[in-house]
Length: 173
Ligand code: IMP
Ligand code: MG
Image (cartoon, rainbow, N blue to C red; front, side, top):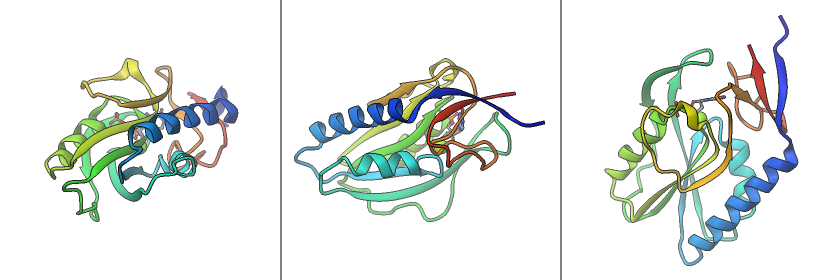
């Protein structure tokens, strides 16, 4: 059966949210040299659009985590893949995420990075699936609130598909 995609946010709506987040980040990190840590793979499109609006002396690292197996339900377990950035101590770290769902990934990452003694540690997520939260996490920069549905596009996938769509859709199942 063909998957059915229902439009949720157009690329213009996404661009407006990204510009707003970029303005907030520029203001808060004006005199800093932040280290952006993007969570692969879903954040790559958002990151690319966001950093081109940040005229700051920043650096970018990537982490690879997994909580999802195949499909659309969280396994509840989060793991860090090898190759995590090592120079965190004393840095102003800003995590860049595509979506916060249960909050387990964010909680894990904040704990993991916090132990490495950054000068500051903040979280930015393009989307927030609030209703599904299982652990409390503080999101410093939040883009778009999304319903309790599985969403794809603009980097977000279902089984590695749909990441290349410019808009965001609900995957009806
Ligand atoms: P959490 O640990 O439950 O907050 O899940 C975070 C991760 O699950 C995200 O970074 C995504 O990779 C994935 N995820 C959660 N909800 C969705 C969705 O609706 N579409 C695509 N990926 C999702
Ligand atoms: Mg992700």
